[in-house]
Image 1 (cartoon, rainbow, N blue to C red):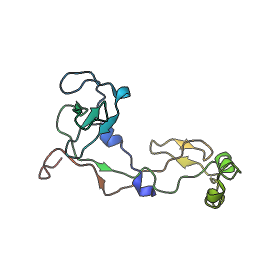
Image 2 (cartoon, helix red, strand yellow; image 1 turned 90 degrees about the vertical axis):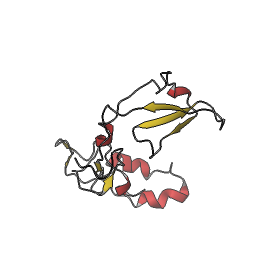
Image 3 (tube, rainbow, N blue to C red; image 1 turned 30 degrees about the vertical axis):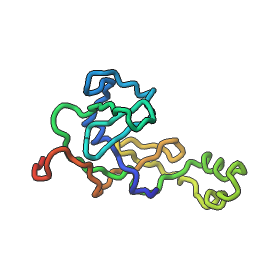
Image 4 (cartoon, helix red, strand yellow; image 1 turned 60 degrees about the vertical axis):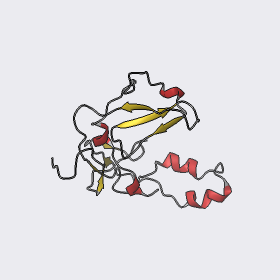
Length: 152
């Protein structure tokens, strides 16, 4: 996967809510689910089945907050390559990596010593486990349940 494939889904998450009750009023047992289906045709909903039988009915769960879903622009999660902490890089270059993959890991470089600024404005050192970059505009958009003629 490429860096642009990783997007910040917080704007989508802000429009959703956790529910453990299906549309028909029955309890959702997500731990017992054998299949979970998410469809572009049904934004704000997912479907759960408890068997692998094709004749089994799907249980529909509405996770959208009240009101219409708004189209959101998804921004890339990272604007530059993520830096690898030196300790992690040392592990990745160890003999535990299968021989056929070692060349890839040996070409990796450790993080620089300069601190990075998170989207929240906090500054973290490159040796911390979490490294992020400032926000950057993108052309990613989430499908909307509203018609395309409506604007925000």
